[in-house]
Image (cartoon, rainbow, N blue to C red):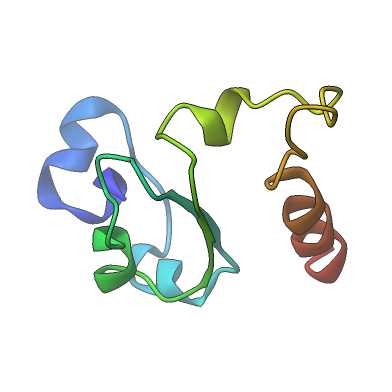
Length: 87
């Protein structure tokens, strides 16, 4: 998201065809208890969203894929499906 703003280049976020970033496929995982609960990023770029009830902002990155006895990782399956659909 920072690459879209004028200060992005100051931090090495240089890329070609920035005006077309919105056309790229995107999936975003929004945690119910995260700092962006409510989907603030959704106002910047269109794309797919997965709202994860009971997750906090770090869970979407660090939830374990092999601890389903506690709770199934709700990120892995939608992420794999998104990747396969956008190969």
